[in-house]
Amino acid sequence: MKKNIYFLAAFAFFLFSCGNGDSEGNGGDAKGEVNWNNAADSTANSLISNFWNAGVKYFNYDSNGNLTFHYWPQAHALDVLIDAYNRTKDSKYLMYFNQWYDGVKAKNGGSFWNEYYDDMEWNALAMLRCYQATNDAKFKEAALQIWDWIKEGWNDNAGGGITWKRGMEYNKNACSNGPACILAARLFREFGDESNKEWALKIYSWEKETLFESSTGKVYDNINSNTGEIQDWIFTYNEGTFIGSAVELYKIMGEKVYLNDAVKAADYTISVLVDNSILKDEGNGDGGLFKGIFVRYFVDLIQQDRLDAVNRKRYLQFINANAETLWLTGTNKQHVYFGTNWRNAPASATGLTEQLSGSMLIEGTALLANKDMI
Picture 1 (cartoon, rainbow, N blue to C red):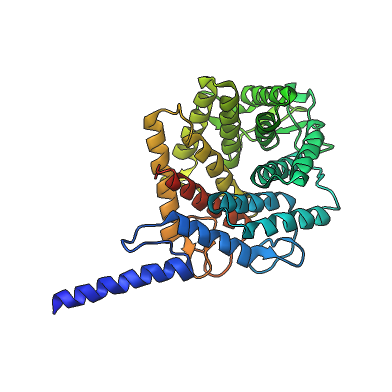
Picture 2: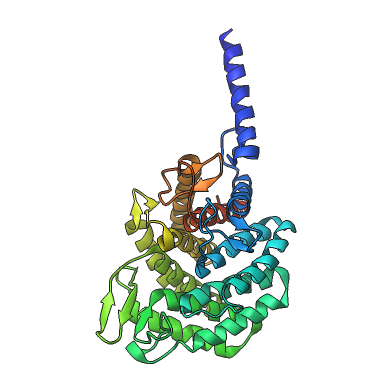
């Protein structure tokens, strides 16, 4: 009798796991393990179902239908859908790419220009990836146009660097230089213009000399050239884009020094900017996106062929622990919502930025799982 009870209980668990994987985004298999492809599918479906607004053709600012338009999160929402398309090759995503292009451009005043250089950089990066995924020339043209605007932000204040905002030429931020370096390097690798490689090297050199603390791996937020003061805020996304810059230049130059820089920044982040080994809560709004941006470029670092095997193992363990914590305890399974703290599931609603960070973690983990690294 007892064996029959155990059998029925096990069978019920099997049905529950499979049912959640289909209807609630559990992503589990019959053994209770996480199927990261299923989890990523559920995550992409949630982003579309709960945030995409077909009327205005951009993503709402929260899951309650807030229409407030913030330019830079739209880029990361597009990035997540590109992740899903690259992983699945499901043509359903192509419609959203095209509608996003029309809707974001229209809402932004009929152009992708913006007074914040970092905001333009994020959108150019996303559209370059969209071009690479679809070969649709309008995304290439938009990315190149934005890049021309971004280069206007470079000046000699504080020894160089791209300013944060038009009209604030004295303020040089990690967030306006890290993504610019990544963009320049990727444009060079895609189209072969030597001037873009020089831009990437120039931007990287300035940020490393000015905002990177090589002894610890810290990436400081900004420098004010009027006062010479360095703002010592440390955010995961600045660490992430410095890692991304170093990895991109490693791909171009093949020099281990860039990989070493990336490792230094990664080690600092996963040892300091954490809460008991889980990336720390950096709030909602802009801060809600920071962890996901770190994860995107950290995952790229993990895949580099000359990364030390011991470091790769540590990094994979870190990603896996964060992903399992988010998926198993930090996800509202009814809607597949993520919050600012990856240990705590949001009760009923969430914001776009924190949803995107969680989505990037799940997609990044699925990418590594599909390469048999996790």
